[in-house]
Image (cartoon, rainbow, N blue to C red):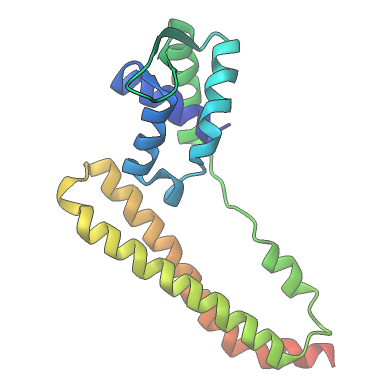
Length: 182
């Protein structure tokens, strides 16, 4: 299951034919890089793969001013079928991402407590900053969000709050964790 495939196919299905640069602008407008695994630089490769698979088709080539020529793509009938399948798979999938930090922490018996505390504090600051940023983005965008976009934003915020809470708990547990390694 590929988030970039879903993004490209969904965008073409919902908005009609587009070229890669228009899709990049859509990623930015949707802020998809903040809440989904959609990187703007991956769009062009995804469009080429989807075209080879017959899920999107080249409609025309455009040139505006001094900009390079741009190929405009549209979703095909086969692409719409694939989009339906992809939607179904992704909506039903339950994914809990792993964090390499957990493995490192489980094997950190020889790391000094002050070093671990410094690392956990830095991670906590990062998660707090991300939470504050996500809350600010939501507050600013709330009037223009659909009901689905709102709950997606709230989900992201809930995950960040959970990370903040867990890291605060970890800071309290560090003395016990490090004493086990001594």
